[in-house]
Amino acid sequence: ATVEDATPSLAILRFDSGVNVSIIGQSAFAGQSNLTTITYGENTVVKTIGQNAFMNCSALTEITILKSTTKVETNAFKGCNKVYKVDIQEGTEALVIANKAFADCTALQSIKIPKNVSEFNGAAFDGCTALAEIIVDPANPKFYSESGVVYNAAKTTLIFYPKALIWRNALCEALATK
Image 1 (spheres, one colour):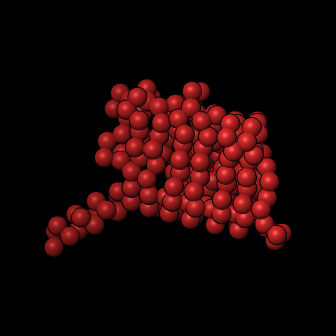
Image 2 (cartoon, rainbow, N blue to C red):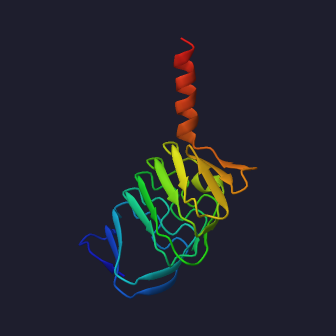
């Protein structure tokens, strides 16, 4: 990884082509308030994004979860309140998204869950107040989504109802009663 910034705080984190990282460790980049960009070179491998790895990186706006990633741990991106886009690349191995992995990413409005996501629950997006929809790949064998709401594949358990959808529905209902 290389850093492109003359100041003591990190602004751009670049993983060069072919880099193979088993884990981005616990709190490795936590609190880097000037970190705006994380880039990956071709054939970069990152297996696990550790607990609190990028917690409170308040200038970060986009997150890419590589196809090689198999786990995004608790609070990995918690408090990254300017993140509006999370790109989870479809991989061949199962991907686990831990509780509160993206908690308090208050600018996040939508996210797509590819077919290889094998485990996550609503707590992964706790405090994501702008999140209005989660779109699950129809080929995902574990989860199903409809109108932004996530259920288990059998549609017997509601897993996540987006916070912004609650507010939008409440507002529509309030306006309809006037």
